[in-house]
Length: 86
Image (spheres, helix red, strand yellow):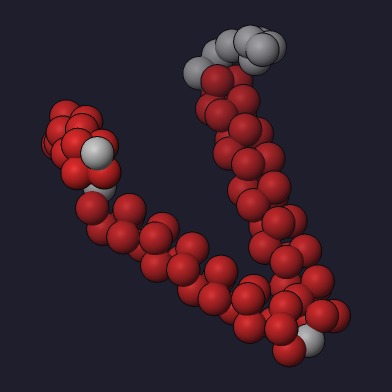
């Protein structure tokens, strides 16, 4: 049964293969693995450092989302639109 699910997942992924940026996806995976390893180590060894690092990572992600959203609105305004559509 597991082989069947695995082959279905591989087949589904193959449909999107031409649209993927391999270097970017590998970079994301490596970043995730590094962050998760650091968080696990800190959680075991230093709770305060864990809390601080977790907070910094979370805040950074939130800031990236805010900056991307604002950049999108600014781009629309630069194209002559008076108020960005919501």
